[in-house]
Length: 384
Ligand SMILES: Nc1nc2c(ncn2[C@@H]2O[C@H](COP(=O)(O)OP(=O)(O)OP(=O)(O)O)[C@@H](O)[C@H]2O)c(=O)[nH]1
Image (cartoon, rainbow, N blue to C red; front, side, top):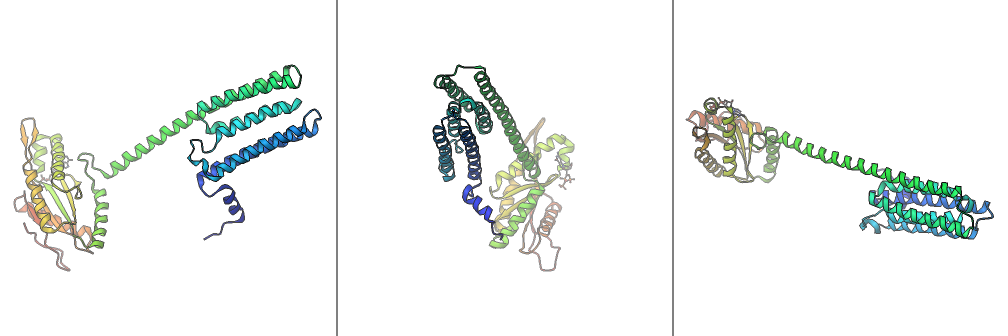
């Protein structure tokens, strides 16, 4: 196993190892870095300009960065995971907008830098917010900066000039831009969500088509082969019997020839329904191909399986399938074989097929059981 590098260990301690929380902490750290950079700019302004109150700016920097540190620590602790806004995006934005508005008042003639910082905050925040939240944040920003402009005019005793108008316009453009961007992001998200759902649905349909026979709704041959293999292993482990039966509708060609293919299809559906209704839920009936079906009976003794197939045979013979000029009856022949541990499933199916052949040759509408195979022998005559 690779030992994590020192950088990775530090990163895990700082960001936490939980992937989701790591993303949240990373975003909070980014906001913290932005706020610290803004504070750095403000401190530079305070150092360079004698008109700016340096002590007020230092307090402002400490409080602004301190607030972001507290929120980042709160997110890092995992306490916010239960909240509807675990990244604390809204509180962080309210905090930074408030801090930006105060900076606007404190920065004196250098207040032109503040709208640029506001733009950055709004564009970053807009990715995680809903439309309503962005509008709410926008209204709050307007109010906060409205107060800031009023305070600047009053306390700095400077009249509202063309530069202030330009800054106010800049704030409005930034707000409008971030709302438009948010709407676009929400639309893209909704479309992505729709596409993801459509894809999941298409995959489910595909999976169903790959494993199910469309006409009867039964598992198809491929799905049945997987199921039989699973049951073979289960039976090998548990020592419980596994039985396979081949079922074939008698003289089915005549149904098609006399009543048409559509009636043949309906007869196949009725047959599948009758057999399913006669066996346990845990027994699996699959359409093997054409008018041939395979029934998998797990954990059933051979004599019970023979009785069950007799019941299936009787249920099929009792069916009356309505058609245009009366009703149609079917009969079924079945060949049953018990799987022998360490034999292949193909061999067991071959034995069931031989038994079915016996049932057909003895006059159809009957059940034949394949004898247990003698070691080294592949041909046996079935018992009816
Ligand atoms: N309607 C319909 N017929 C099918 C379908 N699949 C297979 N068949 C028909 O099933 C018939 C099978 O005929 P055969 O193999 O001669 O067997 P059979 O007439 O049942 O005679 P035995 O099996 O010897 O009793 C053919 O006519 C096939 O066209 C299907 O999906 N729908």
